[in-house]
Length: 152
Image 1 (cartoon, rainbow, N blue to C red):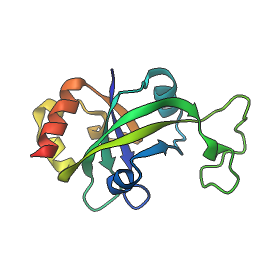
Image 2 (image 1 turned 180 degrees about the horizontal axis):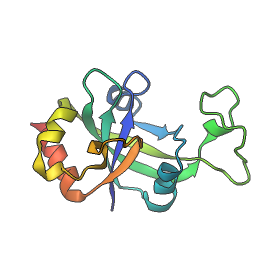
Image 3 (image 1 turned 180 degrees about the vertical axis):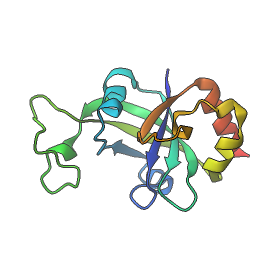
Image 4 (image 1 turned 120 degrees about the vertical axis):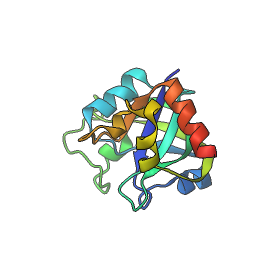
């Protein structure tokens, strides 16, 4: 089992949106490293920390679980989608998505500044300068610590 941080801008798709929908396809990722994580490493049952980014208070807002492994991202073929990719081929999909299921919302967002203060989280990829990936792996220990801090 693996563990991940999925970043989303809350004005686009928030933990509240996921809570309402229960399960949602995580689409629109257009980075090859993220695509490779989905294709090669993500499995049903993996844990997800749902992170709000590009907002006044960035941080981890809750927890989700992967409930469907990688499959072709339909938005890449949809000409009306902002994620349309004219070079995408339906016979050999370039982009993938997974389905995630809502598990819990933290009482308040566990702020990025608080993550930076925790020595045991010093190796988190999202804390590295210049990291722009929308999905990054975390260890079980990091996942458990962030979940504990978020529930407090």
